[in-house]
Amino acid sequence: MCLLEFTAEGGVMMTRKPARVILLKDARQKLNPEPAPRWSPFKALYKMRRVIFYGGLGVLAVIHFDKLPYSYLVVPAGNKLIDYSITGAVAPHPEPIEGRFITCAGAQRVNCVVDGDTFWYRAVKYRISDINTPEIGRPECERERRLGMEAQVALLQTLNSGGLTMERRERRDVDQYGRKLRVVLQDGRSVGDDLIARGLAHRWEGQKLNWCG
Image (cartoon, rainbow, N blue to C red; front, side, top):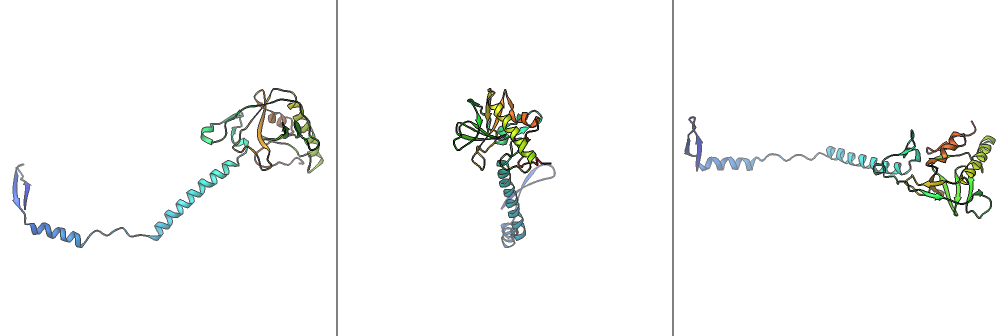
């Protein structure tokens, strides 16, 4: 076998190298190959646990986000919506509220007010999603019942004052009771903010607060 070798002076010379030397080297490589990486059950278990862990975090994030209250979908300082393309929340679409409202009584309910945060409009039940008002049906104390009645009257007066719209600002369209979740606005401002300022409502953050303290 002929090989080219470079001399110290930069020249090139041709030499012969026995073929048996090269064949012997190839044979040694075949007889003693590099060992394949050993399979470790501990490494496999570690990788599997990481996949399960991060996959579980993703599932929990989706479930938790679906239950976020309205206050997590707005910037509290200015009550402005955040980027819906990031959160996946539903962009607002104003719906006008028209007609005359009364206090709900009896089985037939078209346009009427149940309490400070629940009303019927065109025979559909709505829940104001950014606030929670005192209970009227099952109050825990006399103070809660009294404040609940005041909140009911305040909402009734507001709905009859005109210039109202409502917007869906949550991923869920209805709650577990079948009520449509909407924020009611008057001149671009949430009517819930007015009830809160008057001490007749709390900002809804996923749980009821005590009205009897």
